[in-house]
Amino acid sequence: MSKSKLVILSMLLALILFVGFFYGLLVGHDQIFPFEILSDINKSLNTKSYDSPEPRLQIYQDLSSIDELISIKTYTDIVNKRQLLIDYIWVDNNFPSEKYPKYYKSDIKDESFNDMNNLKRIDSFTVEMDYGMNSISYLFLANNSNNKLIIYHQGHDSRSIGGFDNHSFEEDYRIIQYFLDRNFSVLIFSMVGQGMNNEPVINFDRLGAITMNSHEHFRLLESENFHPIKFFIEPVIVTLNQIQNDYNFESYFMTGKNSGGWTTVIVSAIDTRIEESYSIAGSFPLWMSSDPANYSDYEQNLPDFYRIANYLELYLLSSYGENRKLVLFYNEFDPCCFPGTLYEKFPFESTIKDKLNILGNGKFDVIIDNGQNKHIISDSVMNKIISSIKKVI
Image (tube, rainbow, N blue to C red; front, side, top):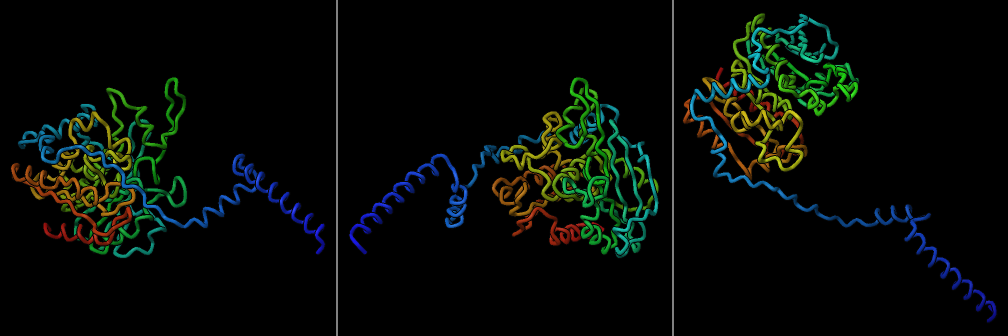
């Protein structure tokens, strides 16, 4: 190659490098083509992993003084506290002992459960409440029955597989069958506004027509004369009224996960017909809830309600009484909320047990589902529930 050609080639290369350098500056500064392509390549090549910083707990409650948060000292305090809760929920209309489901159907047909074992029939109940809210439940009657009823509440996991207006009970086929296999009948509820339950449209003055498709919308209904927390509690109590009248169960037990676990605690704190309650990943005391995941939804952080009875007092109300018990289950590494790892740093089991010893009745336990890293009710937990129930039957 001649000297002149080498000079021209060198100059051409220099020009290409010069143009490329300045175009590269434009790509980086103005993020023009091919910035996104190069960025994606860089991310794929950069395989270095970084550990997420441990979140700040920001929990400042002194464990040695949580006893002072409990105002219940005597049996009379138990009775008075329960009545105050009833007065708040039903605004002085008292416990709805004479209210029954509006619709009650025996032996309904539902192809989702055609192949269930030990199933005699399915009955359904529809409770209608204020503002057009309703709650639909199914009763799975065991063919070979031990005459015991387990009330199971799906909580926020009651999502319809087939879309709105389809029931979500098939999502918990495994749990229903588990209890039927052990000769328990099962009464199952979806969370209000989910599953087959409706989402009424309400016209608010100056706000317009709003579909009640979020529990946060219930805040719009709050007034001196009405507290929407009743939407969560009333369906179980009213349906149980019908069951107590028309069936011959010897005892009632209740369980649920997440908000279903929360419902389990609240209902059993108010309705003493429920002997034993098993709440899975359902609640922490509010002082443990600096993490938004543990603060949860509308119904779990109403100031006026929890000033009447805080969570520690609700646990006490749920567990107090002859043959009564409350067990709180926490998944050790729950990715959703209320993890057992956090409970173990701030345990309160001994405080509740000490109060029950003074009162002289009732049982309370906290059990961690060790190694569990999902937000579920595991087979291990269900086995523990059955083993616990068998100790009293």
